[in-house]
Image (cartoon, rainbow, N blue to C red; front, top):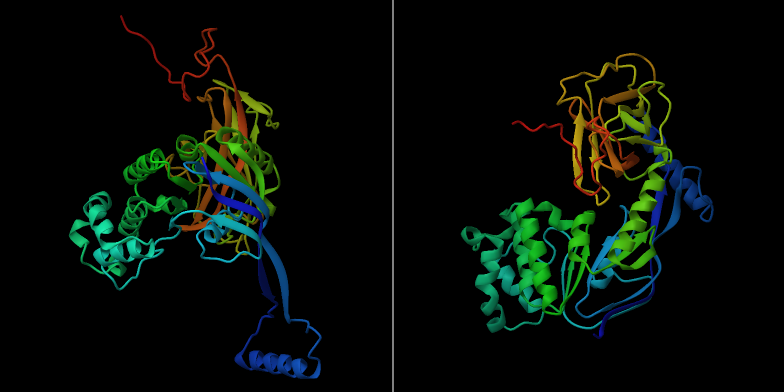
Amino acid sequence: MSTVISVENLSKKYVIDHQKQGRHTSLRDALTEGAKHLTDKFLHPFSATENGPSHEDFWALKDVSFDIQQGDRVGIIGRNGAGKSTLLKILSRITEPTSGRVSIKGRVASLLEVGTGFHPELTGRENIFLNGAILGMSKAEIRKRFDEIVAFAEVERFLDTPVKRYSSGMYVRLAFAVAAHLEPEILIVDEVLAVGDAQFQKKCLGKMQDVSAQERTILFVSHSMAAISNLCTKAIYLDSGRVRSIGNTEAAISAYLKLGAESAQTDLRNRKDRTGNGLIRFLSFELRSCDTNEPLNSVTSGSSCILAIKFERGAAHEETMDLNVAVGIDDRLGNRITHLSNVTTNQSIQSQNNNKEGIIEIEIKEMPLSKGSYGVTLFSTVAGDIADWVKNAGSFHVEEGDFFHTGKVPHEGQGVFYIKHSFRE
């Protein structure tokens, strides 16, 4: 197999501007402050004012090197902000690197964002031909694939409608169908497939496997380790713009999950990859004993435990708030195993006291999970709005135990959950 993508010492730098801004109580104050800054600029052109702009260099990628062979199915994994999308944009020739070298052999079709490569004023039919022309295909070649593209995208009724009127799901279906069926030598797909429904995602994974069987190369970014594991023969693990691991898919996934578990034990105050308005902020997660309330390193199947979540309230913490909290528990590949929520148990969380910090405790009377490590995602809403959402906020380990209280330990590898049951004669 020949090398179709060669990346040598690739780096990409962005310059981030920071502007300190004071709080103005009136338009007059704002105008006065602006005039002062303008005067300072003329009197002291080479000095920064107290509230003037500052600049920060941010390296989205730093000294990244790898080779990809023809027919490889390569997964690119890493946390948000690791540099995955920047790498794909450079490989798709959308963004120029700051330094380094990229060599690509063959036609590249990219699906990076909803609407990438589509003209919103053109119809679905016209965009199919436009994208084919961009890939260097003749009209005859595009017509040969046209019916197959339309059938895969399931947009027959809207084929002559301008794509600006498409829903995000329709956009993605057509965009993926075009990218996958117009026979590019290299297919690049970002997390954008998450917009589609589960059935369409399964359909796309099957199509990418068909593309790979034709010795065409695939680069696939996803936060679903199950999808990466099922589709990809190799994986590149990026962390803070650098390559942490490259090669065997399972080895790269293990390195990613191990580092994620380690980072999950750090103080959540420092986590930047969170979503929400900050009325509630999660501070930590830990497993505790029901009897002593002491922290636990692990829990055995069938035993009781407490999931303890420490949090702080935002500036309006003294006010009564409609607080809902959910805990998502995932397996080692990131598949959601179960979901714990005070909404489904119909219980309210009291938050009307004036303490800035608090602890939410979730009691599990009989741990139903089998032996293994599990990740935790924390989610909260206040008055219906997302307050804090932290993925991979923690992890815990379950050891094998006498779940059925019979002295018989269930065989390992026979499933994730244990279910109480009995046989009737």
